[in-house]
Image 1 (cartoon, rainbow, N blue to C red):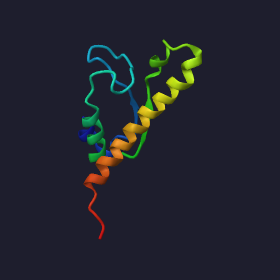
Image 2 (cartoon, one colour):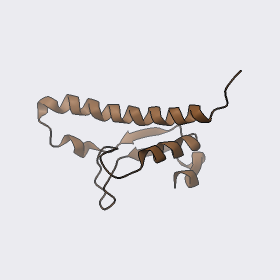
Image 3 (cartoon, helix red, strand yellow):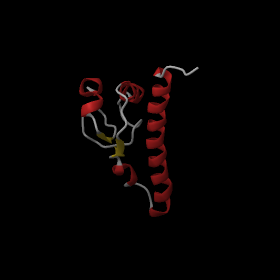
Image 4 (cartoon, rainbow, N blue to C red):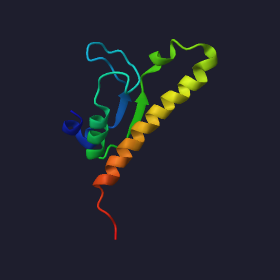
Length: 97
């Protein structure tokens, strides 16, 4: 689907994972989506838009004292996805002499 939409039509993403049965909005890698495949497809279309994590349900079970750490983990997961897209982009870029 990502490749079909392409660079010109895919401008921003609301990102979350799920169990393939419900729209459960869990953090990437906690469900069943193929995140290496997703990030590869985004790199293939040279995606340069925003990634907005829609996984705030992840925070619901944590006590207040742990919320800063849980929020940081959410941030780190998002940054990891971005690094993966950048990695795949570099792998496809022609090397400069």
